[in-house]
Length: 234
Ligand code: SAM
Image 1 (tube, rainbow, N blue to C red):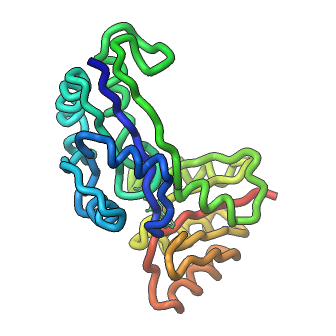
Image 2: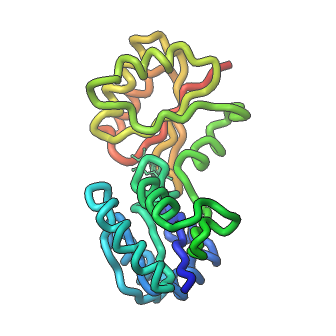
C-alpha cells in the first residue's frame, strides 16, 4: 500500500491565495491534519470541501507523526497544513516529515523513501517570500532568522543582525514589535522595512528608522497585526 503525505501551503490572510492543486489535494485526501482545525475549517468551508480533521500542533507533532505513519502504511492520503503559509517555516512540520522519512525503511529515494510512501509538497504562499516580493530590496541573498529567541540567545541574534552583510528577515509578533524596533535602534540599524498584514485589508509596507516606525505603529493605534521585519543592507 502506498500512502501519500501532502504538505500543503495555505493562505497567509486572503483565502483566495490557494492553488488549484491544493484544493484538488484537499478534495482527494482521506484526512487533514492541521495546526488548528478551526483555521483550516474556514478555508474548507469557503471552497465547500468537507473532510475529517485532526489536530497536529508543536506539542503533539511526534505523537501524531506515529499515527500518520500508520495511516500512510495503510495507503491513506494524508494532508498536513499549518495555520498560515508554508508548513515548517517557523511552525510545525519538520519533525513530522523527518519522522515519516526515517521511520519508513530503505532511506530516501526519488519519491520520498524506499517503502513506497510518498511525501509531496504543494507549494504556495509564505509571509517570508511575500514580504520580500514587495520590500523593494535586493533579495538575491538574505538570512532568515524567523522569530528571535525571547530571552536566552536574543542578544547573540541581535549581534548577528548587526554584523550581517546581507539582508536579514525576521518574523515578529504584535506583542514584541515595538521592543524589537528599540533593540534594532540600539544596534545602530538605520533602516528597516516592515511588511504588515500582507494579503489582508490593511496590508502595508513601512520603511524608515526603527524609532520612526515604532512611532508610526503607535500612532496607528498600537502595534496590531502580523509582521515581517526586514533589515536591508545597501
Ligand atoms: N509558515 C508561515 C509562513 O510560511 O509564512 C509562518 C508561520 S509563523 C508561526 C507566523 C508569522 O509569520 C507571524 O507572526 C508573522 O511574523 C508572519 N506572518 C504570517 N502571516 C503574515 C501576514 N499576513 N503578514 C505579515 N506577516 C505574516
